[in-house]
Amino acid sequence: MTGLLFLLILATVGRVSAQAPVVSARIDSSSVLIGDPFHLDLEVRTSPSVKIIWPSLPDTFNHFQLLTRGKIDTLSTPGGTLYRQRITLTSFDSGMWVIPGIRFPVPSTDTSSWPSTDSLVEQVNTVPVDTTRPFKPIHTIRQVPFDLLDYLPYILAGALFVLLLVGLILWLGKRKKPAGPPPPPPPREKPYETALKALYQLQGEKLWQKGEMKPYYVRLTDILRVYLENQFSIPAMELTSEELMDNIRKVTVVSQQQETLRDILATADLVKFAKMQPGPEDHSRCMQQAIELVEWTRPKPKPEEQAGSLSTARP
Image (cartoon, rainbow, N blue to C red; front, side):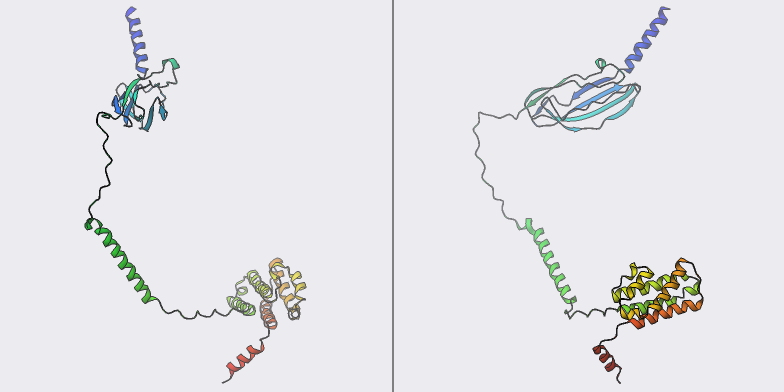
């Protein structure tokens, strides 16, 4: 019974000691010159079942400045897990300074039992100055002797750049042709010419012969609306058929063709909205009426244009 109790106590003590993290800290040099860096190595040995929180040192503490934080390396060992981190520190204050112990929080235990490293002492020394010797005078500016070889690469590079630049200018000068008068702008197509061209193109596509009646009438009426808008400043694209008929009465030459336009718009509206199926003669009639409407309302040529056409037509 006593032996069994001893084994139980020994196993409990072994399990507790195996779970307790062991932390340590060391520096690679206990004495450095002011401003020189040195390393602080942190190490923790713990079992996989124990979770620890790795402390984060502040950027400055107790006359030390933190330069870099190394990554935390993890190494599996037979007794558990080994964690390592290297931190680089420096100091710009001469004297003997203490790196305080660093605590490693263990969430599963009480704060009083958190492991901590031992404090370390670092001696920061100033640069020794021999005050017994007199101050030396300031050296004058030393003149470096001129050596052409030191500047030869820059001279060659500059000469090569100048040669390339001159060659490029000569090459561009040969390619450049003497500037002549700019070509006259192409004559602007008149609205009625655009409309007639679009109507003949629509006629050649033979949409209604392919059974595409609605696209045929949509394009037909759009061509006429664009023509009226560009030629007579009637906002035809924004108006309904009835509103368009009211507006064309203000333009004498267009009002003379109002019945023709009304017939085209009415037929088109029946096809687009009532899904009516006109006969082939209706399709051809609407196209012919549209061409005649544009031809009738086209502006009369000016006297000088008539004279020019007559002189061109003479043999």
